[in-house]
Amino acid sequence: MFDVHYHLLFGVDDGPKTIDDSVALAEASIAEGVTHIVATPHANLRYPFQPEINREKLQALQERFEGRLTLALGCDFHLSYDNIADLEHHPSRYTVNGKQYLLVEFAELVIPRSLSDVLLRMRSRGIVPVITHPERNPVLAADPQRLKEWVGSGCLVQVTAGSLCGDFGRQAESMALHLVRKNLVHLVASDAHSVQGRPPSMRRAYDLLHRDFGQATAERFCLDNPRAVFIGEHLPAQPGIGDGPFPRQPRKGGLLSRLLGK
Image (cartoon, rainbow, N blue to C red; front, side):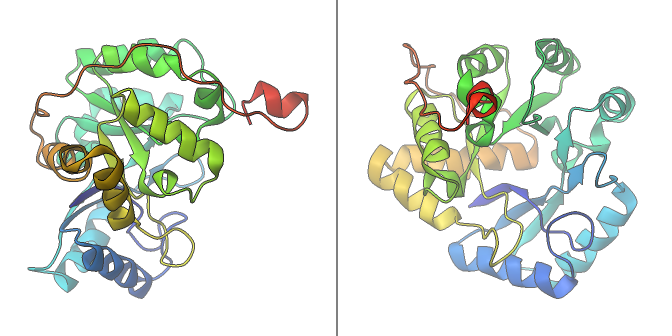
């Protein structure tokens, strides 16, 4: 399997703290049958994105796993003004393996309508935004129809393996499964951070998809499509987007929680 969203690099964000932590995390993925991992450190205000340091740490890890695991670099790209401005000039600094795919994470409090224009501008420059874990975003949980617009414009969608397995709660699980049923998912990735806190879970997700949706779907999400992203190829032909409204998501709590879709 190919895992294209993964906080593997040690000491750069909220993932592993030491190289031994990174090695233990990678070993957990190897045990699940993962052969390729894209290390995707955060690129945001809290965790400065340092490509040179990231490459050095990736190389140190690759030497530990030569012949057992193939590693590449990308990032968990947050849509800040500075990031977007720098992306215009240095897209390969942020994209997966320096190719055309870019993992994009939205804020959890508000997603301005203008961000649709940002995604379209990326597409016009040959960048393919991969919208990460929308099932865990309270704004998109309240308005999932926006994903149809973005997918229709050429964006991809990645859901978290643990969401499909219920690790992020009932709402995230329900949303992830609805997205799968409506053919609005292209990739499953672990977004792994640590062995204990947020393990890979790719095998569990693959087995669930195989059982409930069939082998072709499981392989499309965990092997075929992420392989294309890893090496920078076009995705194989995908099923058409499903019709009909999304079921209403359960909302709990007070006014603020309801406004945020929580």
